[in-house]
Amino acid sequence: MSTSVTTPTPQGRRMVAVAILVSSLVALALWAFAWPAARTAPRDLPLGVAGPAAATAPLKDQLREKKGAFEVHQYADEAAARDAIEDRAVYGAVVVTPRGMKLLTATAAGPVVAQLLEQAVAGQAPQGADVTTADVVAAPANDPRGSALGASILPMAIAGVAAGAIVRMLGLRGIRAVASLVLAAALVGVVAAAVTHSWLGILTGNWWAEAGVLSLLTLAVGGTVAGCAALLGPAGIGVGALTMVLLGNPFSGVTSAPQLLPEPVGFVGQLLPPGAGGTLLRSVSFFDGAGSTGPLVTLGAWALLGLTAVLLGALRRRPAAAAHAEAPAVREAAPVA
Image (cartoon, rainbow, N blue to C red; front, side):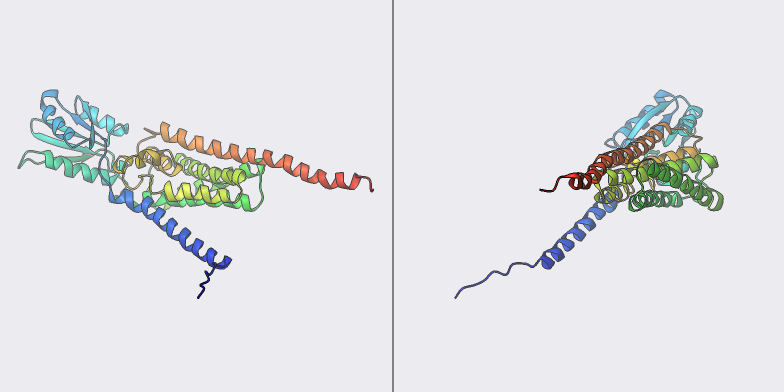
């Protein structure tokens, strides 16, 4: 008796391919979103210790025993520690005084971090001793847990992806594409600032500076997506969208802190627009721009590279289009045998 092997039909192969692709995307999304959240813990979290060296030495030794959880900075007194927090050099500081320990936090830099520091310092205090807490830079009253701020970054990334995709689908290229992306980003920033600052009250800094940050974040994402599409074709939209939304958003650390994410996720996240944008928005809105240089350069670099790719894609297309237009003319001019 002979047996025959049934060859899968093209439709059957497509069905299997779709199932594998979707399950792979789900696995990637769970890894990107759930893994960092499940591994949240301090990793070289900048923390200040203020007071006389002899008095702070035991505390510093205890903190350093936590296997790299904290990056300890020594300050002479409480005033210097407060300045360091306001400059975003540290997330908080422990002040050692003859009356006990005092914890300085900044919930505006991350309520999750402030809560973590309270728990950590309480565990280091002598038994029965009270640890007083002072919030040096408080989070807005309308967003005490920072959840609304964290939820504001994803819409900016989605707006950038949408802008880049729409520019591609409308066939805009070169200078027209760049102008459209810049205009869209500017309007998105104004609208976003009106919602987050004027209406919800979750941002409390300079209104126009916040609008500028939101615009630059949108432009960095939109320029990257449009640039990828200009160089890679329609597939570039998917590459840009996956990078910015599927990786950039969960790796941003905006809902906690980059130093609470597994390594090297926190570092990589700050090199992507959502992470850099979230850090820059905190600096501009709550810390008078302190610590804004790095994320500002990162966003500017992404925007510049993306828009440059858009222009290069248009230049690459012109020779091909010219050659395609000349071909019929050559055929028509050829003598008939």
